[in-house]
Amino acid sequence: MKLNLHKNEIKNSLYNLYGEKSDWIIEKVEELLEKYSSLSSLNETPLSEKDVILITYGDNIQKGGKTHLQTLNDFIGEYCLPEINTTHLLPFFPFTSDDGFSVSDYFKVNPDFGTWNDINKLSKNSNLMFDAVINHMSKSSNWFKSYLNNEENFKDYFINVNPNADLSKVVRPRALPLLTEFEDTNKSRRHIWTTFSEDQVDLNFSSPEVFVKVLEVLLFYISKQAKFIRFDAVAFLWKTIGTSCIHLPETHTIIQLYKKIITSITKNIYFITETNVPHNENISYFGDGKNEADLVYNFTLAPLLVYSIMKNNVETLTNWATSLKLPSNKVCFFNFTASHDGIGVRPLQNIISDDEINELAKWTIKHNGKVSYKNNEDGSQSPYELNCNYMDILSNKNDNDEFRANKMLLTQAVMLAIPGIPGIYIHSLIGSQNYYKGVEESGINRRINREKLDFDMLKDELNNKNSLRNMVYSNYKTLLRIRTSEKAFNPFGKASYRVIQKSIFVIKREFENQVIYATFNFGNKSIKINALSQNVFDLINKKEIKESTWEIKPYNFVWYKS
Image 1: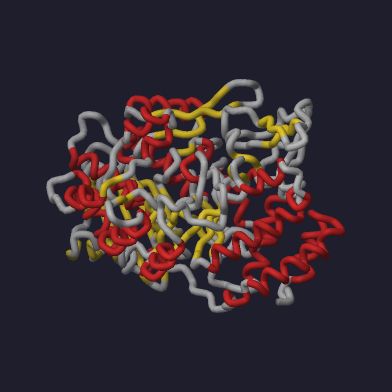
Image 2 (image 1 turned 45 degrees about the horizontal axis):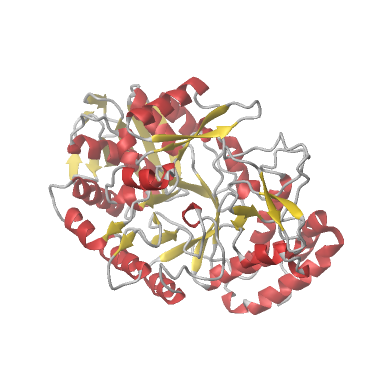
């Protein structure tokens, strides 16, 4: 299939990266487009308030006699649909470490999880998001084995660096060695770039062959019904020694190239970039609002909500929310409060002080969580990530279950009310708590929020009206039913913010003449405020409100439709 759309732009960008090899790349790109021509569709399905994404591992829910993916499909059918219409399947490929993020084969399903047939059946019930873990892959992969075997086709797939090179400027998300020594079949030592761990060898995107092979991976995922593709750790994609090797212009160019190429064949695909970095760096992946990511992870929201609970003060939250700007009406944030990872604190840089970030770290320890650190250029370390179940990091030890649920739902209601698409981690939906056993057995801090659950036992808890899980889940589903029914919550709709008192956060949402006032109390006392609009309808309690004042209880909220 000839690459007609944007061909000159694509060729010029490829030439800037790959020089005279750009003609070869164009030829290979057109071969891939022909191979995947069945994907051809220029019909675009716009995102709306009805789009909500569940974030889960393929094996989070388990039951004997079924594959994990089959069991997950059952859970989604019984407890997620219709309000949650999309599933982000965290890496479900064969892997060797990092709970899936050290992929050994991009084209296979982990047999412990199930089969491609299971994925296909899931796609009949739910839209799907796949992970493109393309910054690095497992050292046990056939690609890396072929590289160490000195096979011609793989000779440039990975990055061999002189160990004496000055790498001091490289920004790292881990306090581990950057280079890992391997021996090839000729007994030659190679020092391979490993941004995240010795098991995760970085792909070399300065290689034309790697660029083309990764494009094939992306097209393959779309052929397997991926509607969203999450670009994991994409900020580190391109390496130039002597630079920070993060957010380099070449990285943005590669994402833009994949976007142009793939949207020339299908419009029904959304790119999401995952860059756990300070806010202004993060939003650079929107590009000009049309040419790069369709959605960007809103990493600042999760720690800022915790900070607001800790301080009983929403002034910083309001100032930050007011500052949010998008480059076009074609892009939006992917909002979330918890995920398989911890709560990153780097996005808070320049929003709160370093002392306050350290205060959050101490708060996490006090709430029986863990703190992960990163190395700084000066040799010091600073907090990188707070590892704690989200409900537990919000709650005090003496809080009863009702208070715990209220604080959790308060933060989730904010996440559902702000512009963008909400992503709900499975353990947030079902009211899970810290999983200490996972940390103790593995020594991995992130396991505190990655518990695997027996489906039958989970159902008993979710259906028990006196359980904490039921309190969280049943109220969460109520919020989701409202959100997906109200056009004012359109992800591209207008939002304005105000502080009435230091603990009261107000979001006014507007879309197509519909208006909703979402008002939140981050304090420990009931507060009355003057009504922001007369004769409103309480969407949660389904009743008219005609009073001239609104009362918001401690750690509670109201959604009033004007």
